[in-house]
Image (cartoon, rainbow, N blue to C red; front, top):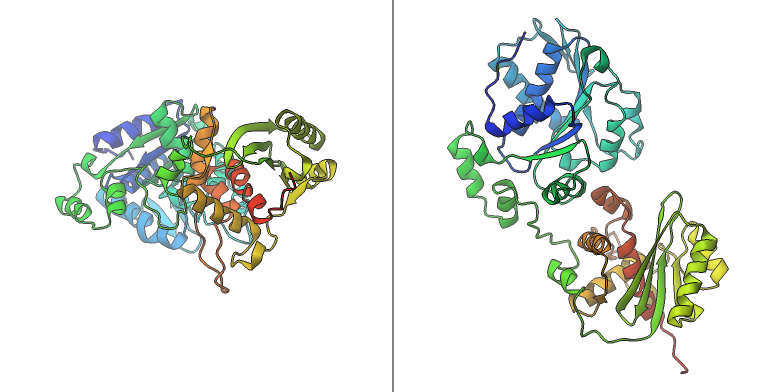
Amino acid sequence: MVLEITPTEKQYEAWQLLGDNTTSFLLFGGGAGGGKSFLGCQWLIAQCLGYKNVRYLMARKELKQLKATTLNTFFKICSEYNIKRDIHYNYNAQSGVISFLQTGSEIVLMDLVKKPSDPMFQDLGSLELTGAFIDEAGEIDSLAFDILKSRIGRQNNQANGIMPKILMTCNPIKNWLYYSFFKPNREGTLIEGYKFLQALVTDNNKVDEDYINQLRSITDKVTRQRLLLGDWEYSDDSSQLITYDSIIDSFNNHFVKNGTRYIVADIARFGKDKTVIGVWSGFILEKVVVLRKSSITDTAEKIRELQGVWFIPTSQVLVDEDGVGGGVKDILKCKGFVNNSTAAKGEQYINLKSQCYYRMAERMNKAEYWLKCTDTQIKEHIIEELEQVKQKSVDSDGKKAIISKDLVKDILGRSPDYSDMIAYREYFELFATKKIF
């Protein structure tokens, strides 16, 4: 059985990418009403009708949402093309498997929510898939995508001459999809095998005009910009602690005065391969040094070298002592920063780290930081990390907190080492000692 489809122009472009020999991971969408779910379900149906004994994943963050939305689209397409249940396919609601009777191929339904019982998505480890379709991929963690990449290409790909592929759909969201697909696509730096194709409601000639008018009538400015216009840059997150303008200004605040010099270092830990060291004069970040996969002795030696160049005594050196950073602290006999230690001065923060981040955000919004950074990539990383400095819902005691480092890692696809180093500069203001000279 062959599907005779009539795609929109953008869907046709997507079909070309899904059928080529170079695209491994396609992100399609970036706006509401672009025919995203329709494309994904059509692709799975076409693959399962056209090839024998293949197995594809249909996934979304929540299984309940998957069944209420994406699966419903699947059934509509089957009805439109006269693909009948119990004749062409069976659907086992209990097991979440759609079986195609003529080809022996399957579509497996699964959620990709990060469970406390399975934070590393080990449940995916038993899957052997030909390919996968993730609807509304902006809802899932980047780790789920990374694990899933290792599970495709394992079910009759070679026998059928099928290249392993993952198709994802999304609306604009500034998380790992932005940093892995949208931004590199705009800058021409997409990783080989990655492709991004934007499709808006105005690209879909099959959508009702009433639906377009509904999008136009959305009163919330941010939502309208995202869903109607596909604006990935538009952000008005009320939980964000530092304004975007203040972040950009911090690289050009030449009027900030010099002051006491400090060294602050976020030390690599437990498999993390990057140490970030900052040299400060007051609230001027004079120099950033990045060490990759260095030993604790090499890190300590580099900090000592910077002390000698900038004339900074050990009492004005601070390292993040969580993990192997404790070893660097012991070698240098310097101050140590413990993330989960109690906030200073009895202030109502959940821990010292949140307290420093809030203080840093307040000071940066007042244009009291100058980040003298000339390295373009480091500057971009700092901007991205500072944009993720956000308030977490207050706890039962009403103490202020920032969102977790693990959540920021999920959003950015990397650890926020630069923003940690910048925020820890506030330690010296919280624990200031009187200078004799």
